[in-house]
Every structure is written in C-alpha cells, then in structure tokens.
Length: 437
Ligand code: GLC
Image (cartoon, rainbow, N blue to C red; front, side, top):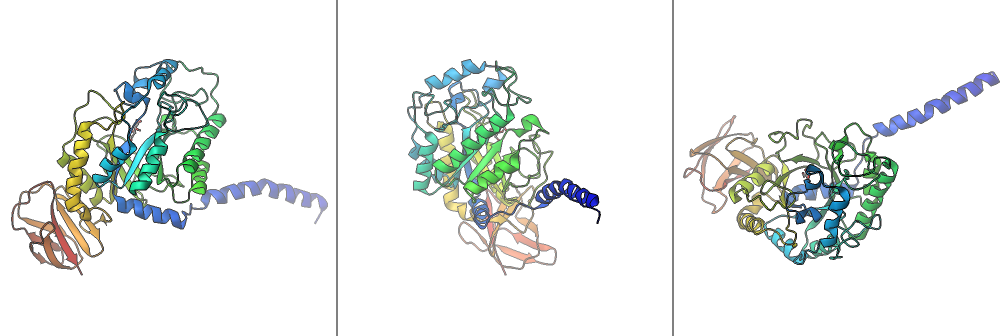
C-alpha cells in the first residue's frame, strides 16, 4: 500500500475509533451487580417505607417550596439556619415509631431544593453541623439508630439548588437574589459528587439514593450516568432512583411515581412514564404536604392510607408514605397516630403485604391480589356482594378467610374462580387466602 494511503487509513481509523467506542459504551446495557440485584429484591419485599421531608423550611411551617414560592431572598432565608435548634429530636423515637408501623425503610431529605444540607459536609458550611446552633448530624444519628433497629436508611438528594451561586438556574429559583454571573455546572457537579461520596462513605450502608429535581431543566445534560456509576462504585448495593417523572434511564435501579400508583396519572406527574421492569415505588403525603405545614390538618384516614398500601402492593409497588417533622424535631401527633393505626393493621395482616409481589388477579376497582409462593391473597377493599369472580388460571386447592382460617366456598372453571363469601365483605380490607397448587 502507498505510504500516503496508509497514513490516511490510520488517520481515518483514529477519527472513527472514538465514535465507535463511545457508541458501543452507550449501547452496553447497565449490568447491576449481584449485590444490587439482591438489594432490589429486598426493596420489593419491604413494600412499605416512610418518607421524611425535614429541613430548615420546617421552621416557617409552609412546606419545602416556601423559599421559591414566596421569592424569599436567599441570604434572608439562610438566616433560618442560625435559629435551627430542634431540641426534641430523638432518632430512637422516630425509628421506633416508624418501625412499629410495619415500615421497613426510611427515606429522608439529606438536602432539598433549598440547598441546605441536613448532614455534616465538608463541601459547604451551609449544613446542619456547621451552620446551626444545634450542631448535630441528624443523618448520622438516624443511620446509627436505623442500623440498631434493623431498618434501612435511604437518602433523598436534590439535583436542583436554590442557594448556590454555581447552580445553573432552570425554571425555578429565579428570583432569590443570587448573582447570575457565577453559574458553573462543572463546579456544581463536582460539589454534588463530593457530597454523594460523603453520604456513601460516612454513614455505613445506604439503601438508596432518591434523586429529585431534574424536571427543572429538561434537555440539560445532568451527566447522570457518571454520577450513577460513582454511587454504584462506592456502594454496589445502593439503589439509584430518580423522580424525573419519565421512564427510567440507564443506571437506575427502581422507578418512582409521585402521588399516583403505577399506571395512574391523577396528580399529573406521570404522563411521561411507562411502567418499567424495575422495582416500583409510589410516594404519597399523609396530609397534603411534604415538608411541615402548620396549617395542613387534612390527614388522610388510616383506612385510606392502608388501602393505598394494599393497592400499591397489588400493583407490585412499594408505598413511600411521607411525614413532615416539626421544627422542634418531633413527628406531628397526627402522623404518629397514623403510624400506630397502620402498625396495628400490619401486625394482623402484614404477612399479606411484606415479601409479596402483585398477584395473579389483576387490580380491579373492588381490590387487588398479592402473592407469596403458593399463597394468593385476595384483598377485597370496596365490594358489596358476597359473590366475587376472580379471573385467573392457577388451580386453587383451598380458600379461607385470612384472619381466622374460616373456610370460604368457591368454584373454579376455565375462566377463573368464583368465591362465595360467608358475608358481605366489610372493614378496611377483607382478605381471602387461596392456596394454589
Ligand atoms: C416534588 C417536589 C418536592 C418533593 C417531591 C417528593 O418533586 O419538588 O418538594 O420533595 O416531589 O416526591
């Protein structure tokens, strides 16, 4: 071959190669580690978690969006930190109350959109340890207590920031008195990755990182994949989820739905997402607010909350139920009462929820089914007849009322099973257990 053509070939190869390798990297599917797959299974078995939105915004008592919604100037808002002293905070009390409800994990805001870190970080003095008279690392205290009591700790982390100069401002946080000439994505991205490294290094095993906020700037390259890789390299079993309201991206380990069950879109956040094959989670508020709202007494009834948990399980999803702790560090009385009511129900019926997957009978308006091995649980939530037809194929050997083992008559043909209940179903959830062949 002519020397010139050889050089040409070499140069052309050089030009093609980077593209070729970038292309193949992009096409390589994300392969979760064995630990990660185990963690996903555990996450699905857990079925029920408590979400905690807590930050200096709790002092104002109007939810976590107050700063943005009222255009509170950033430097003025930041003064809240200097008065933050949640004198009644007791990690043990929180974790015990939450654990008694039957919840298996806690997901807490380590840093929300207001940019204030609720943990000791070297990346910014704007944090609970260095920036408040309280000076305690509540994430550290919770991590230790969760480990003691055997429940998983997950961390919410906002991609969006209303405080920092270097955050490239998107659709929100535009009138908070920040300089506009210091935005610097590389600096902000490094800050986040350093914080995530701290969170995944200083507090023992973390169950999941729960991201939120990229909906603020659609189409922007948030460099998620590298960030997800960082998380998985620090803790392979740590699940990554992102509340971006669209079908999951590469590198994510579970899919979340805000204020709706998978497949529903009453709240308007889920129009852009299909249900993926990943573990699913729905988050919902106990009243109407995430962060503490001093006016919001509109708590959902225990019945509504339990039925939501059951319907989520029937759709093969977890429920992440939110509480906004008070500025004094305590969980609101009403929230504690709901935890207790749910706990009482879970003591009796938790077996039909924990460790189950969505069952053979698809969700209906009357209720749902959950399944564990050969046990199929029929959860009858709203139904006013004693005959119930269940479209299903698996052969049923036996039917009983779950609570006391009373036999339930049934017949089966090709189309499915017809239950002849001994009464009209009543209560929060009338459960019939079917033993399958
Ligand atoms: C929304 C809100 C946020 C809240 C989250 C919980 O994304 O911006 O305040 O933390 O929903 O799902």
